[in-house]
Figure 1 (cartoon, protein in one colour):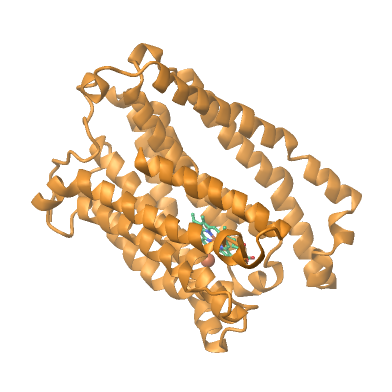
Figure 2: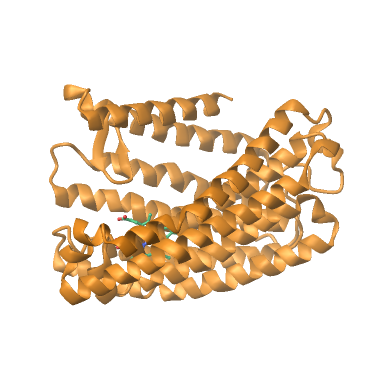
Length: 403
Ligand code: HEM
Ligand SMILES: [Fe+2]
């Protein structure tokens, strides 16, 4: 509850601050309360500090739940992996604090991309893999040894390709050429972890199929959201990410709709679908069983996924390809000029996303809100003990194959 209140304070405080900052109402306080001016690190420094503290607090809460099982386990086992992956989240978000109002663009953009790339594309990705693998192990659809192997391979591959690959964002930041060369090479090698992602996504789909046919049908839609994480990881992060990843493409397309196409499908597809899946797991336990609606979860699942697909394929992807064509043909400036953006057919392409967006909001978000409301309105008096056939807590952990 405390964390929820803290999140609300940071979210609404920073939003109001950003608005006031953009309007120039804050005077000298713009840096602390308003808008720092960095994409993805927009929020004022005070909110940024509070967010870092909140994220560490979240790890402490996790630790409270995990401490029993951690004590019994080898530090190379699944519960510890989960803990390390969780700890990396506040640690790497905190790196964003190294930017400063007086530092130059090169320094600030460097640290900013530690957050965008290392935090989002690497450590959150690792956390997702560990989390999803953990869930599937607890539900008994994936063997623990297999899950652990995937996690270790992920760590090795992301450390190799992902960390140095951060520099693929810095082509225009004035970073030394040696960094760029390493960044371009290692980021091109990301095709290796991507292959792994594909296999993983396939594994998730298979696990999802298997799950629907046995007693785990209780959590069918939560599991389908986890399957969606695998699919979007493949399409949004993998295919759309790699499409713009090779230096020769990246150099020309940077900041076009192809970037947005990748950023949105990867971000919502992976880090949007994952928390929704986890939320459904919890809501299912918290709601009186006869008041639960699988139908609402189903509508939400299909609306969110179709809406996202619609936006990518009917708007961002074709627009990005057209922009890339113009960038190569007449120059980067032309692809981002108002003359191009305001062309009638570009305008039509923008409007074409409306049905997908409407579906996403009305069909996707509204049923989820309704399910939350049902959990509050009809709380399950027996909570999780009621469902004796499924693991009764996320952290009960008793499988074979420990290290
Ligand atoms: C779930 C994982 C991922 C997420 C959430 C994600 C998110 C993002 C976001 C939000 C941006 C935009 C940054 C900006 O506007 O400056 C971005 C850029 C980029 N991402 Fe990812 N990404 C993911 C995985 C990947 C992977 C696996 C690759 C490589 C295959 C990749 C390659 C790139 C490249 C090359 C850019 C720069 C594009 C540009 O600035 O034009 N990303 N990513
Ligand atoms: Fe990146």
